[in-house]
Image (cartoon, rainbow, N blue to C red):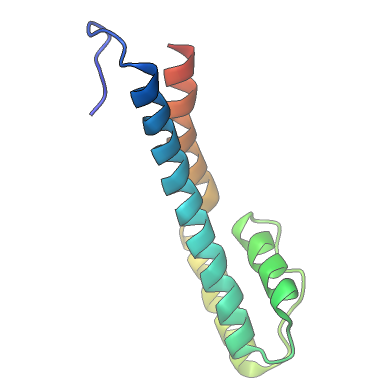
Length: 110
């Protein structure tokens, strides 16, 4: 997929396209995770508003912890599953961030 060190550099347009595709994939993974958390919070906990659900999902995804603890039973069950999902892929955002940033850093420094 990438050039070896013995091959010549690709044209700048191709390089830019590659960087934008990496950025797009990383952003898409992060956005999907936040959407799942936000929609789940809103479905299973009727007392939470969309902006609080999005903030809560972002805090959980980054490992900061909950901003608002759900009040209903179904909200708490979803919350537990979502937190376990995030813990199961501990540093999910980190796992997304590292591999997707390394092509930027190595390509630019090369």
